[in-house]
Image (cartoon, rainbow, N blue to C red; front, top):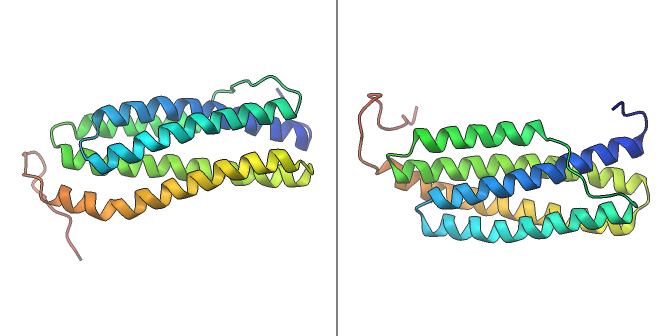
Length: 178
């Protein structure tokens, strides 16, 4: 379907992030099953609850626009999830490495969502939709907070990964500091 005006652009981006949130929810459930670090598991569990609320917020946005909540396949989300699943499989033998990779994949998800919500917020401002703006800003705040938590925990996860026993394969067991 051709997008010919800003309202259609906004609706398209809304359906896109609505689908992305659903896809990411499924991805987080898989990450939770594969994570071994308790702090990482807690972050994922918390964000699963937030994502469920974000989906409800998006459904309210659709309602405020007089539209049915509907998903439009988000190829970006699908790609991010495919990459995350691939890296979880490739690191399955070393839980500490896998946890670090899960955190990295989760942060990629957050940055995708942050960019999407920032664009929608600009559209809501232009459309003079204060209630829609409030709901989208709530989602954005949660995404930014989650990204910050992931980034704060990454050094600890990397330190644990650097202590993981060498399992064979590539002969470089540590990242050089040069």
